[in-house]
Amino acid sequence: MGRSRLPLELIPKEKSRKITFQKRTMGLKKKTYEISTLCGVDACVIIYNWTSDDRPMEPIFWPSNPEEVKSIINRYKEHSKEERGLKTLDLSSFFEERTKKIQKEISKLGHQGTDQTKYPTWDDRLNDLSTDQLRELVNALGNKLEVIKSRVELLKMSQALLEGPASVNPSYPNNAMPSTQSLHVPYMGAIDSMSLVPTL
Amino acid sequence: MGRSRLPLELIPKEKSRKITFQKRTMGLKKKTYEISTLCGVDACVIIYNWTSDDRPMEPIFWPSNPEEVKSIINRYKEHSKEERGLKTLDLSSFFEERTKKIQKEISKLGHQGTDQTKYPTWDDRLNDLSTDQLRELVNALGNKLEVIKSRVELLKMSQALLEGPASVNPSYPNNAMPSTQSLHVPYMGAIDSMSLVPTL
DNA sequence: AGTCGCCATATTTGGTCTGA
DNA sequence: TCAGACCAAATATGGCGACT
Image 1 (cartoon, helix red, strand yellow):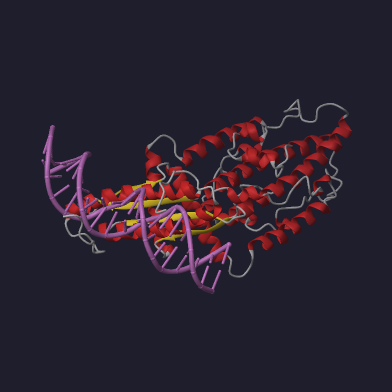
Image 2: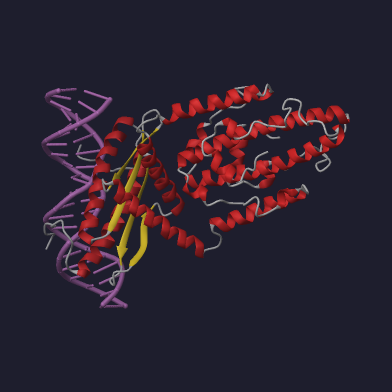
């Protein structure tokens, strides 16, 4: 009885784990409250639990006012942003480099697509879209890619029909368009593999 | 001696406060670590201290990896955002309706793109991407669209060259591909107007 | 299943002491 | 002064049982 020594690993029994979670959640919130009042500092905790069927749940947090939490995490983000800028490579420059590479790929096609001003590599408006809007947009873009792909297929077919069995695109003799992989787009692999954007 | 009862208010003595802060910060981090491992949940703490001269200091946080912290606070933000949007229209049903519409549009093309199983309209993995990852992905998709567009241009040109001045695509006599607009993709207008995805 | 209390013990931590 | 180490009171919290 009393209390056995706790091994620091996932509590196996679902039930005990749940109870422990509740108790410790309370404790954690209390501690956070205490340090913030005793020491006059800003602090917050965020805890994510999972329902039994493994789907995400509402976050639990302190302070109870979401606005306060947001203000603190915003400060955190700002800070980490500054940090990163000092370090080696921040996101924007990462993008710049990546898109430069892409632009190069495009210019290899030898077309008008190389006009930098006409096709900006990044639009700040993207920063203002909500996460949901972004998801939606990704999905939409994926769908649009499908449509375009259909059209390319059509064109290839009719062209092949006219040209005979020769390769369709002189710029890409083996019919190997610059693939997603060659563009080095992070996370793109996942998207490709789920055939949202089937390879051309 | 021993320990006097602690009044839950700002500790007046600078020195004691500092000591207490250090001790309790350690405790808080430890507790956070414990709840996350014992219960298998994601959790983070962020604490902001102030230097003696009232200027902000580096945040103290757990997990020690800033990326993990970011991922958790991103999820937090997403959630609070969803909350707000939940009011009138359920998101998923909204998506369903939209993608259904798109599928209809695609099927109008009368091509192989209508294979539902081959081209899923929504992949749940999108739900797990952070906001930054989503932005990146949108940008990447936009760029990929450009590349593809270039290729379409190329094909159109070569085809037109072979066929003469006649319309390029028999399916679309006036050379009017289904535009973004006709797909009724929300926010797509903004993207188009910023010529990230110039009209075909 | 979920919640509450209880209680024995584990842990935390304010204050103090000690040694550079 | 500035860390640590130490100590004992104060807390936190596993496990259990009763109740719902």
